[in-house]
Length: 169
Image (cartoon, rainbow, N blue to C red):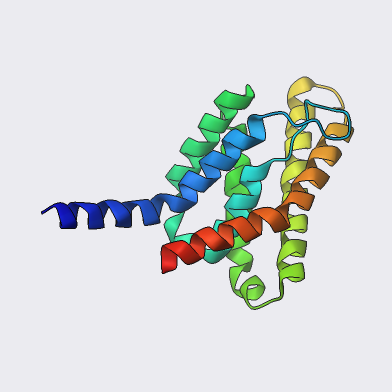
């Protein structure tokens, strides 16, 4: 009886691992890092995780899970509720659409795909903030956060690939 319980628990954890890592990276994204003398801007790590899992385990990501994690991230960051879930769904949709083309490519092409998709997400975020503020939002914080996110992708991809190997094995 206990063995069956632990097997089911293990399977549940394996199925929820993408959402758990996205949530953990979201929490890490909220923590300010002293980079370039600015402790307010930090990389948007959870966007990397959404992209990674959208490519490598799309069947284990649910739209509802992304929305819930996005709302939790919005509450932690202090932005309007729905902002982050929208970005997650944009990245998830585009990544899922390009999945077949990207999976067979070398890492630098996958990274380039992330660069393009995250640039779209950051541009949309900037545009939405500009619209809601009724004025042109400063683009420098978005550019800095974009490049910090882009630079962190190889390390996060490596961590997530090890998590995926452990889960598959």
